[in-house]
Amino acid sequence: MPLQHTVGIDVSKARLDARRLSDGEAAQFANTKAGFQQLVAWSGDAVECIAYEGGGKEAPSQ
Image 1: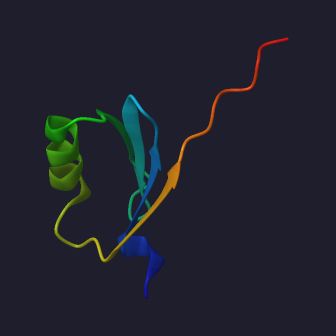
Image 2 (image 1 turned 45 degrees about the vertical axis):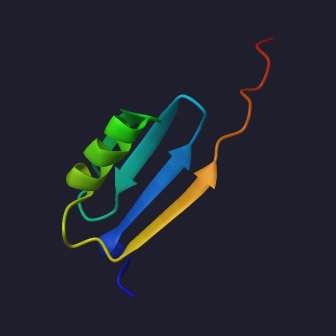
C-alpha cells in the first residue's frame, strides 16, 4: 500500500491532529461530529489508509 495515500491522526479528548503524507499538510479539528466531518473532507478522496493513536497526557513542565 503506498504511504502517500495515508493520513495520520493523533486523537485527544478535545481535538484531532492530522497530517497527510501526500503533501505533508497538517491540520487540527475539534473532536466533535462537525470536526470529524471536516477531517473527512480535508483528507480527500485518494486516502487509502488512516493511522491513528490516542494522545497521552502532556509531560509536566519543569
